[in-house]
Image 1 (cartoon, helix red, strand yellow):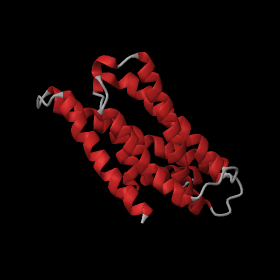
Image 2 (image 1 turned 90 degrees about the vertical axis):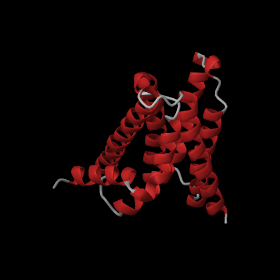
Image 3 (image 1 turned 120 degrees about the horizontal axis):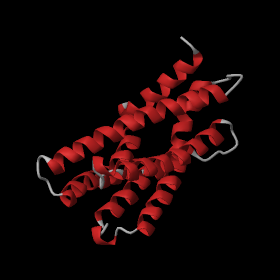
Image 4 (image 1 turned 30 degrees about the vertical axis):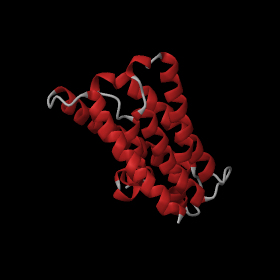
Length: 193
């Protein structure tokens, strides 16, 4: 088995692992207001998140950027909290391109924070690898494959809930965002104390 495939699998396994549920919860909360028909908007949103976490994953893994891991572990649920609050108070009639551009920027910034969380795990795996570029790329690609699968599942479930089960889109958003909000508060309190 090639080194590339090993790190690809490690990245994929990390994002779908229950211990990384805070990252999954962020993705769920980030996409709570969307359905499958919104896939283009979601693709741009997830790409912004990916650019952010790729940048800090690389910078941190290469020891160019270093931030206290306990701060990062607190900031990750804070990103979930802020995203959930934004979803809950989002006014559908005010969903302009400016608001959508703000969501893209927020996803990019929050991606920077999540990349720092991923990097702590990746650094522990890499040890003293001679070349970090190939394992870093493979790990990030594995994360992305897992993330795309999670997003597709969320969008399909949301579309079924709204389209077939006739749950109002606003109510579905409140269910997902409310769950994200509640869990993020618990996580922040746990990480503070």
